[in-house]
Length: 248
Length: 246
Image (cartoon, rainbow over all chains, first blue to last red; front, side, top):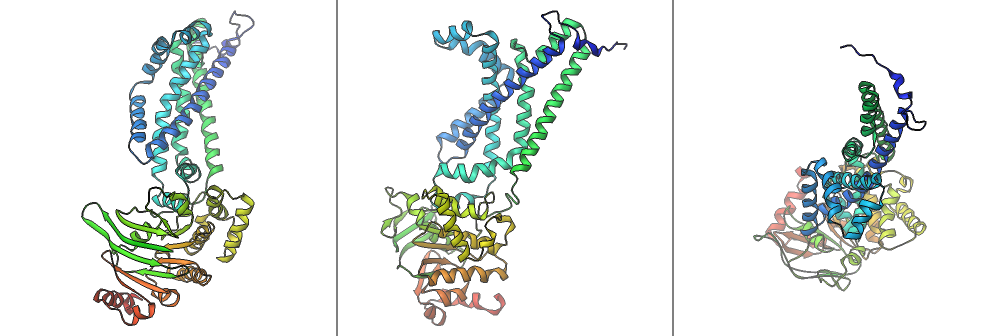
């Protein structure tokens, strides 16, 4: 195959204002990061609540969380996005519907849909990790806390969750990276995040290879950076000999 | 201080672990509970702060009925110190934070007051220099002494010990028993499940011998060791005191 690589293309004018194609990538990266971080906040908060629910005594709360996980884990992400973007707005009360469909900037309504979608989807996965993290702790930890008179919320906050989160940092890291990668589904509902900007650049310039190479590099560097950040976090919060202590 | 009235507990349907127990531990008394494994000793001591619920009968501590649904079990637990066989210190917290956690969370003590108290207790168990260490950096004996300090930090009326030296290397048993002996001398009401017959002989006011969920002997250490009444107790003492078992 013969192909004339032209890396200068990113500095060509797009013909829109004084923008060059590189600006599109930067804007796209901005959307990607905003979507992912907003989704991650939801995923982490909701996932922790659900994970705790799954380990509580009793029947109803663990069951609710389990059903949630099965629903959100077993439906493809893209299907979930279409539901949030095309179907759920139609089910809203009239006032809210008009606001979402007409008053909001289309990019904003797409952004809200994707953030909810990514957040709820990833929460199911975070939930399972929080649950396994808590269940990995020796029963003696809970018993000792009960024996000292701590109440259930205090036990989770002071004893179980600080240990569980330390244990699950590696699998949580991979969910954190996944949400950045998964955010590319937003391109399918017209939100101009990194992948959408890449496709648009490819179409405008016909420099398909350069555009997708740059996108690949950006995703890769971004994820490597996040991974290194999480490793640093893991080191910072490391406690010598955690989970080495056993007993009932 | 602790009273059992006709206490029964079953595991499942068939396993009757505690059989119609009646028992009274007076203030300041040190009671050692011993017996063969599976006799219900650990279950017995765990029912006192409801780590194990009972099916029938009544247990009270300081006049408060433990198994009454109206009793706030957390308040009661805060007044009953419990020391576990496996220490169960919190590995993510320093020694000091292990001790101050419950006073701050449960008693709403200020951090500075809780730390002052913790340091006094660490002094008492001889580990003041370990305040900033993490549990995994301590020996088993040191961890258990911290666990005792942690229990004492709630200023309990009663201290319960569930085989506190069984998970320790032999050379560390003495340091833990020493701390417990000092505690007994200070007038603390204590109930101790243990196989340390030396401790029972020297420190206990009473020895309970439990077998198959029943209290077969309830007497002074002197009487228990020299003139046990039941065959089960005689057999138990032969086994546990034989030179082969050290």
